[in-house]
Image (cartoon, rainbow, N blue to C red; front, top):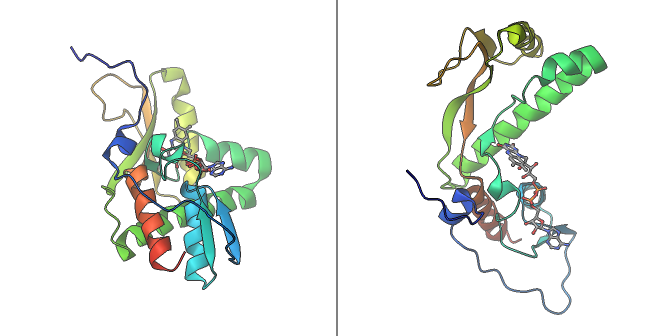
Length: 196
Ligand SMILES: Cc1cc2nc3c(=O)[nH]c(=O)nc-3n(C[C@H](O)[C@H](O)[C@H](O)COP(=O)(O)OP(=O)(O)OC[C@H]3O[C@@H](n4cnc5c(N)ncnc54)[C@H](O)[C@@H]3O)c2cc1C
């Protein structure tokens, strides 16, 4: 039986190297100041650096140590049963825009991991949403159909590949997982290498 420490923490943050950037002193100038070295701030900063802008990133705590570094570490266009809901509620165009934005984000992460050689244990994986309730099978089938309508590689299965019984599963092929805290340390290094 595992004995847990009782302390909250993140295995991703624990495995990531600590960064040691200098404190902000005096006055400095840049075209853009990004507050927060999470995935949102560092993605913005690196995009700006790549576009030739001068950028300063200000982080109050530890790079990669907050929400991103404590997340579930999935890189996926699958978000429970969202596409059926989006098509039904807002129409096909908005659902398509949502799918495209999610796909572009996933592609961007893979490209940067490759181009900047970021060590973050990135692995391709299928993503699953499953139910143990047979009365919800139809929702899984409808979601797979909705996701395919916006061009995503989705299918519905009789059961998820889990060591217990499930009634149905939605599979999105070729998604990914990584260590998000290590990824952010790598993004920060890429920003620094480009003069940020
Ligand atoms: C439990 C959980 C699991 C999740 N799992 C996933 C998942 O598997 N896949 C997925 O895609 N998304 C997941 N998400 C969502 C995702 O983690 C967040 O949307 C994302 O990490 C938010 O990034 P961020 O850069 O805004 O936040 P953060 O990573 O928290 O970064 C914000 C940074 O700003 C700094 N900061 C804030 N204010 C200031 C200030 N005034 N001055 C200086 N610094 C400041 C903070 O210290 C912090 O480092 C999950 C969310 C949660 C809560």
